[in-house]
Each structure stands twice: as structure tokens, then as C-alpha cells.
Length: 150
Image (cartoon, rainbow, N blue to C red; front, side, top):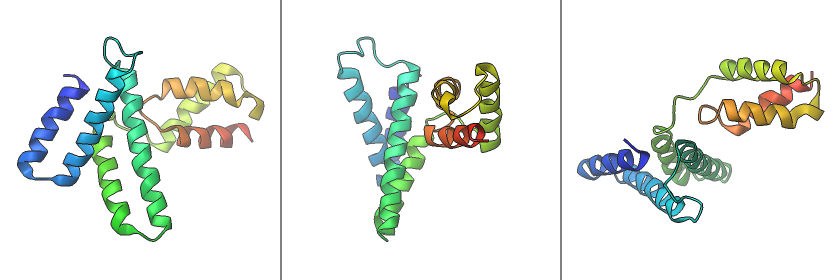
């Protein structure tokens, strides 16, 4: 079952349950998928990797918005954003814990022979590719910086 089919099935369930926040999040996912499919580079539809990147982008947007609302003391606006982020994140594969990410980063550092911050680009490239969809880039970056600055 493709991502679009899963989203449509969830939308039907949300409509029946009259869950407006979930429905809004699912509609945004559907819209983003349709937009990505109409772009010239997506002739045969989205690949699984492209779908994961799209979902991660949508979750990141919601989390960033919620953080801004929290900074501005607007929990009434932050809570719906966080709920939408949770709905969208449910379509992503299970996220790795920080310890699991650190273990993967250690493996990548050993493979590349990285010795300092000058090798961060190499490490980030490989780590991001290996952890695609299972960890967000900000967490990976923080861990890589910590490991390489020792």
C-alpha cells in the first residue's frame, strides 16, 4: 500500500470520527504528495525515500512552528501544531534512540577514518544516508559535532 493510499484510508477514518485536527494534518500530507507528484522530476510518482523526506519535512515544519509559538507564549497555537506533527510522524518508520544514533555515528566515523571537524561533511553524508527516515538531521548533526570535537 502506497503512502497516498494509507493517507486516504486514514482520512476516511478521521472524517468518520470527526477528528478535525487529524484530518487537517492528513490533508496537508495529501496536498504535499500531490504537489510533489506534479513536479517535473516525479514522472513515475514518488519513491519511498522521497516520501520519507517529504514526511520528515512536514514534521519538522510543524515542530518548528510549535517551538516558535511556545517562545511567544502561545500554547493555544502550539498544541495543534504538535498534534499534527504526531499524526504525520505516525507514517514514518520508528525513530532511533539517541544511543542507537551514537552507535551508528561511531561506525561511520570508523569507516571514514574521520579525525576532526574538517571531516564533518563526509561523516554527515554517510550518517544521513544510513539513518534516513529513522533520525532527524539536527540530532545527527549534534551527535557528529560532539564526537568529532573530542
